Amino acid sequence: MRGVPRWFAVVAVLAVAAVVCAFTLHRAMASAVLVAQLSEATLPADGFAATELTIRSSNGRDLRGLQLQVETPHEVVVESLSLTGDSAAASLRSGVIPGDAKLRILAPGFAPQEITLRTTADNADVVGDGTPDFLRLHDPADRLAFRRWFTLLAESQYYRDKPLPEIDDCAALLRFAYREALREHDATWAHAMVLPAPASSGDVQQYQYPYTPLGAEIFRVRDGRFADNDLRDGAFAQFADAETLWRHNTFAVGRNVSRARPGDVLFFRQDSAEHMPFHAMIYLGRSQVEPGSEQFVVYHTGPSGKSRGQMKRLSVAELLNYPDPRWRPVASNPAFLGVYRWNILRGAE
Image (cartoon, rainbow, N blue to C red; front, top):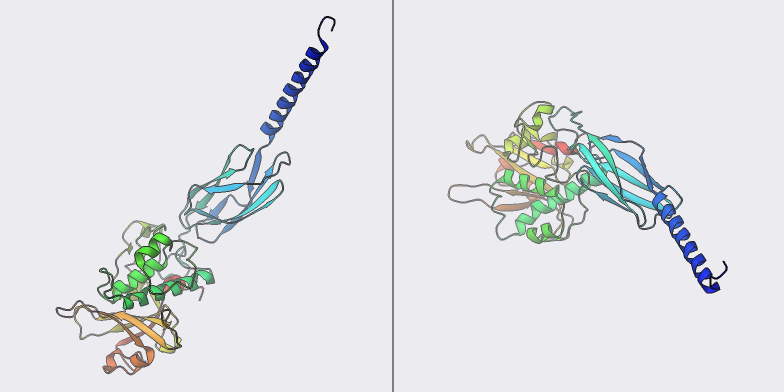
């Protein structure tokens, strides 16, 4: 390169090398893509079916910092995510609301990727009691969580100066505790509820009220097996009186109170009470608020005359020896219908 200063030639060579390196690096980064695959691309929307999502880098680049974002959180849940160098594996669980669940995959240095998991309606009713299987709690941990929350919420109303305004009879107490036991119990919820004791259980995971195919209308109000039309024709409602809860939402365990488990319901029918013959008490088992081994029931008396009624908690021993024998939970009492368990706990127990 006659006539060109040596320093200029060196700079020119370095510049060309830098451009080549930058171009090569750009091509390498551009060609690094996330490759994602589902072991099962379609699942029943039953709340517990699962599939595995595998993710890898197309060129061996590390996936450190990878994240999964669920755009439809009540259709699919990320149960776990593990990273190993240039690959990752995630366990996904279907929700109970059918649809095309979108998952967005993000990792530093990679273009975002999206993958769809389809969940299809599962409206089976294996037991034939009118409660769809997507509402039944299949995981033992979920069943225990429901029982613990249900009894704590019911007992909590006994400790309030006045129960919540919506709780004006025994059925209202059942509806309240049932519905709230199935919610997500986050900080906002806890602040509004003001419980007398800390919860000793996690939340139900299979689904959380009111995010179900039935929305908030989770109490069955008429006879028959569950059918697809029940999703929209009034077979379920937010309100159910004591008789409806007894007939369509619970099943008989027996007429011996020793068979009751926490969260079960004792039903009575007093034919002398013309307007409200059906009554319910919640079997708590041991108190979650006070220490001790004594077993309790809790209930709302319902209105009487000008009185709005009140919350009461009795030990099982007190109830068995109640002054009015019509309220004793014994097989010889014709007014005692028996111990009943919620349909969402049926089949697995």
